[in-house]
Amino acid sequence: MRIGVVSDTHGDEFAIAEVLKTAGKVDAWIHLGDNLRDAPDFGKNGAQVFSVSGNCDFFGDTEQVIHLDGMRIFACHGHTYGVDSGTARLSYRAQELGCTVALYGHTHVPDIDEYPDILILNPGSPTKPRRGAPYTFAMLTTDGKGWADSEIIRIF
Image (cartoon, rainbow, N blue to C red; front, side, top):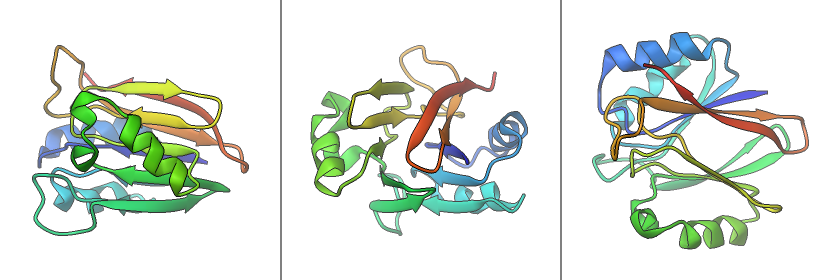
């Protein structure tokens, strides 16, 4: 299964179209907030869409446990876990919930940290990257038992 992960889209229709074109066939999308209204755009090709709200959103849940292809994924925007200062709190919460994947946004900087018992991933931002980062989203691949691969994908 291919799972697209995107965050901090901030209403940029051009960048969203570029993400969808670059991603190709995706089974599910997870939108990690900051313009939650963009999330439905990722389901136009029939993909299942999950979303959480960010610090710039005014509705929706701020975190969610998602069950996909034998995997438990903890999804949040990250601002309530202080991700600007590190991902330890986020990791502890994901493990507390029995998740093997923790997804967050907020920083607009892509990052993948793979540990033996958990994958922590930030897809960056396809619209407003920070700290010299490129315009990005992420892709997770599963094998029916858990995550098999993860990658950050540049769109520009």
